[in-house]
Image (cartoon, one colour):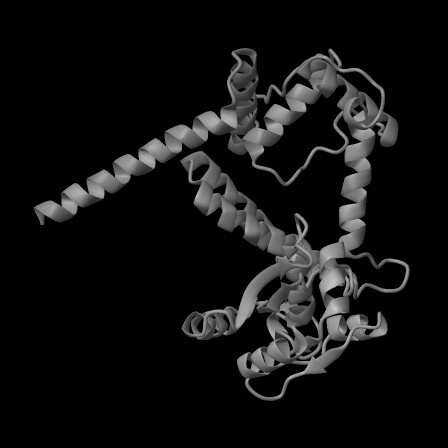
Length: 328
């Protein structure tokens, strides 16, 4: 019977020793070889497995151990040790019957595991010895970058470019994780971390979706939205229906949101009517607000409408530039 060489692959993002039953069987039944000491080698030794760190050529050590002992396990590194697998495969192809090569996954990355890598990378960059620029930032200095990255993600959505959206969302995530890392440097009592951000999000989603996580029924999208708003009002003691509106959003969107919130409770408030001596800017603002109100009454999104026309005009400007350049 041919000897067994088992390449054991484990996730570096899970606690050492968190392996499948099949993986524990093979490491208890066969000697384990590894290229370096690690948390996994320590966990295997603590559980009684025979672990040897190989100093010389790994393929030779594996073949010698497997043929002598009937089997051997190679504890693959985070990259999977593809070059070693390729070398072993070529040698065994030249000597059929010497040993059988198997690949065994002892653990897999769970969904979202790479988020741990993002947190680790940003921690390294924002820690002493990391990136001086990131260490010099504050929540305020990063604010414009967060807005810019969100707009770039919006552009990708508007363009229907899902590949670009994936990249831009990564840039948004960078801002979120970096803000959370900087918050760990706040004074005692004010500090929070990315775990607090994620934990708050999870708690909020569970509370505001009782039709999923509890027994409450919601048969339509309108009912789901109504439940969300009801629960949100109960969570946040607000003195005005306008509380919570993002005041830094673009002015057209801000005006539409204010009008929408007021209309939600059936509140009718006269719009500004500047007198003849009013500042030109105030008169223009009042006229724009009336235009936004008319757009809402017609079921139109004023922000999206202006954006669409402005971009079309930008295309006309570019075309005019090209025509002027071509004629020169």
